Amino acid sequence: MNRPQPPALATWLMSALFVGHHVDALIGDLIEQHRRGRSSAWYWRQAVRAIVSAFAAELWEHKRVAVPVLALGWYLPQIYMAAVRPRWIAALEAYSLHLLTTRIVWCLLVAVVARVFVRVQPRRRGMIVTLFMATQVLPCLPYLRIAVTDWLYRPDAFWFYNALSYAFFALVAIPISVLVGGRRKNRLT
Amino acid sequence: MGARGFLGGFELLVLLALIRLDQEAYGVPIAAAIEESSGREVALGSVYITLERLQRKGLVSSRLGEPTAERGGRAKTYFRITAKGLREVRQARQTLITLWQGVPRLTGGVA
Image (cartoon, rainbow over the protein chains, first blue to last red):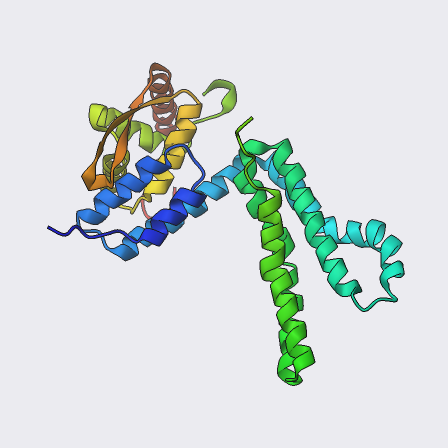
């Protein structure tokens, strides 16, 4: 007899994102209920609520870790602009590549900061990476909207490239840099 | 709870469900027991988050059952209330009884 299969993506998301020791027991319970007749919508609802509630509980319980991550993540662009950028950006002004170089340096910087946070608090890795990524991606969204609007008003190749490159920077390059910087350390040693 | 504070409302419900279910207490029946008595839907994730917090406080212990095919090869985790947990429940009950004695009839939407 064919058993109803629970949504695989919801199960994967729970195993990847649920913060807690009893994740296997929780997934087992949900699968058991799904096979007893609960709908896939119910399964999804339970999965999303579990992930969000666990993250909120983790944040509340580890406020002393979350607050510095949020503060430094939020003010990192200002610190970077005030202390780092002016020293070398002037030297690059003569070259047309300075925008690309700035973005590469920014990605390297967020990767290093994520690495430092995770090394200081390795047990809170999931929360730190998620929070830090949010502080880096969310402030980019208004600029991305402006870039897309510019392209819609002036639909030529230059503004298309401008919007596309900023979208890649904000939605791909920054998240990957944070994830790479905050990756789990190899436990061979 | 001593220096750590009082039991939360949902924590108390989970501990009472554990006492009622005794040996058979895992996520599904715990959530069902709370739903049955409160009339509200309970998220299984919230039950496990609370159980983990109670376990860290030493009020609950857990043991792994056997993995079954019905659960996608995953084992149940059974929970039991500890002696410290029982003491906390008794203390919470006593506190509630004492406070109720000073409360007038709650009728008509006003105290």
